[in-house]
Length: 443
Image 1 (cartoon, rainbow, N blue to C red):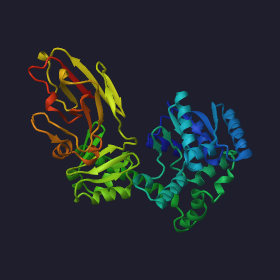
Image 2: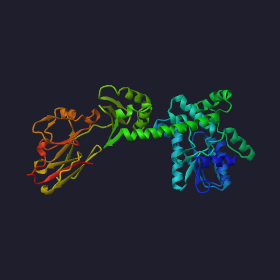
Image 3: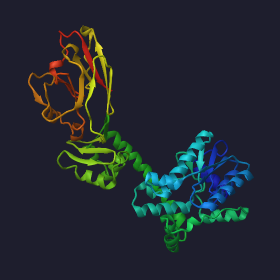
Image 4: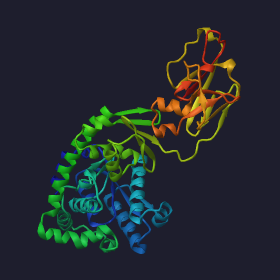
């Protein structure tokens, strides 16, 4: 079996057996005891990590003592952590299993980093992979869930993924190794255990080589996922445009893609949009502009040519003032930087929409930054007449979710000096007679 594990490590480029150090997660169960013994015999430089989740009383205490002695027997560095798992789960509003997973992997990474180790190794094998794939399929999943547990995920490696549970048991018996049984693995309270005890035995009657078959399927799905990932990257490069806190996705480009809903779901995954919501977004492509969709973190508006994505504002924008001589104003995540230029004759007006150049002597301080309101009007640069700001935004084809975030900078007399990021008011423009210029830049 040593040769099989060595070959698997090399074929999947998990780590260098000769050069890399590995933190091995050891619970004391059969799988992790085998993993530790195999890596030690292969000559890998390893350290042992054990998690005590505070869930099984004296049994958990005995597990920790067992693993501690095991590490001493091999002459290896040993690290243990005692978690208050139930309390953490209640605090975060998650299941105990999810809490345990989060706590252990966070702690593993802390130990790995502080001890200067290269990788974290866990004892997952083909049967674990089959269970995960079926559990994900039961709940509903995409390609990532269908390939189950990966042999390598970042700095976490699974050297036993090419082996079945029977292989591990046979090795353990041959080596005369001792291990600890975890009674909670037989409790049908947990979904994974129910799947293992009730469902998988039936499937193995149909296919005795189920674990190996699922492993092969996982490898093929993993390859398909890589193809999709590259296709999504290429499509994203063509369709996506990013500006300050705004992402635009071109609808026409998306409509030309194969499996548009799948591709868009992958593109919108970082913004928190679910599969069902993405289906509704794609269905809205032929419809009128202004359709809005909200994820927990972002807002998407279907505009004329683009999907426009912005962060959701969890607090209403208030009123903030910039006093004379003040250079910085921070307001609900927006930062303005003001600078006074005394020599207007040699001043070059910036071309960027993110910077306003104003006649400093026409301004009355303090300047006020606020959200635009219905009824606001100003005189857009280049025009002599008034224009309602609402009409200006329509003319500029500003998407609905960007309209909500438009701010105006007003003089102390209430006149709008600048529609931030869009247009300076003509009354405050820099002219030949201007002596001093105030620039205000959105950072």
